[in-house]
Length: 99
Image (tube, rainbow, N blue to C red; front, side, top):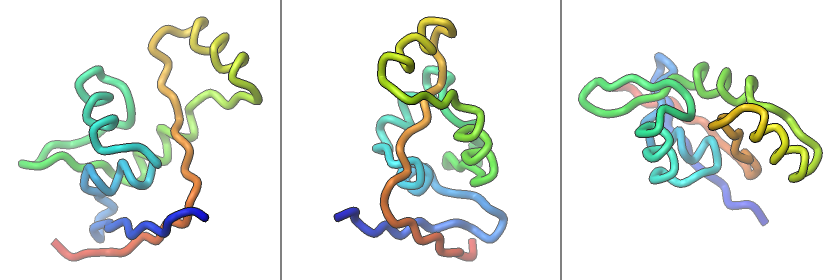
């Protein structure tokens, strides 16, 4: 059974790095690696790293959709360093937090 996640979002739509990673269904370390490689969703640095939920959603929606792993490999071969969308399975509960 999927684990319920509490993801905190600020009123202006910002997510902390760990919350953005949870929303994407990946580890914070993977998200950090993508940042250093210039992959993944755009972010801002205001002392800490933040992601706007709208930017994360836009990044997910532009990712190539495939029906098999073979098709995914072909898609990646066509466009080197193609950004991959992570699975967002599991129950997500967004909670707003004031700064």
